[in-house]
Amino acid sequence: MMSHKITVQKLLFSPTMNRLGLFLGETLSPKMGNRIISLVTNQISRRKENEQVKAVRANQWVVRGKTSNRKELDEIVKKVYQSSGRALYDYYHCMRNETRIRELIQFDDNLNYFIKRIRDEKKRTLGLVLHMGAFDLSGFAIAISGAKPFILSYPNPNPAYKWQNELRKQSGLIVEPLSMESFHLAAKYLRQGGAVITGVDRPWADTSYNPIFFGMPCDIPVTTIQMAIRTETPIMLLACIRQPDERYILHASELIETRRYNDREEELMENTGKVLSAAEPFIASAPDQWAMFYPVWPDISV
Image (cartoon, rainbow, N blue to C red; front, top):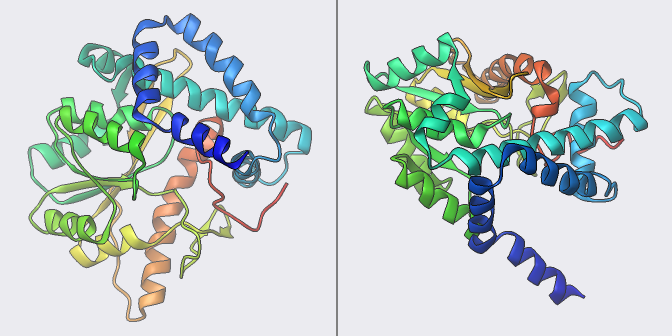
């Protein structure tokens, strides 16, 4: 049984499955794509004992004010998986077609300023992406706008992530999996006036610090905020949110300046807390679209 599970795991997270997803995404109509997404995500979301499903339930319960009951959470989890599935379809459907990307993703005024800042003014900026809506596709949208940030991606990527990173590089993005070496390269890139983009809301187990997020200590790491402090780099949050017309708006926050403190722990906690406070309204505006499948608050179980 164990060897069967390993075989299935390798198959699901293999370049072969990604190529199949790309083929289906490019060839299936949105109507057919939505039909398949509903069938698959309904099956996944029903697995209440699955660790990923448990994490989604807990995360959604917190960001929705801790008021949802079990029955409501069942429906919420299904919506989260459906939203994530739709974003994945859009990613595969559009990723190799610049015209489709431009039609699907629009920029708000702050995002236009973010692009101008890093493309024309060459000002160091750290863009922190929330896992919302078409967050994967938003990197392609930024690339075809003429901006070329340094992207820190998921660490220790499996073959599927490596394959996707190669596609990102083909679009002109500079992509490196997060590691000590790439972290130092990113910091150097910032000091030279470049821009770095990476995720902000994925938790790390056994973190040394637990900043406050939605009123509770969480497992979101402070590492990227530490990089911003050390390089004296302002931060902008990025959130790509689906609209009622099925297009997306790529939002950016106002510039967030970090502040120095005499105490290192206070410095990290206060600055990370400031960033997470700015992230809360984006998530609260479209919680179904927050595709976070890891326990941000690991002590919560609902």
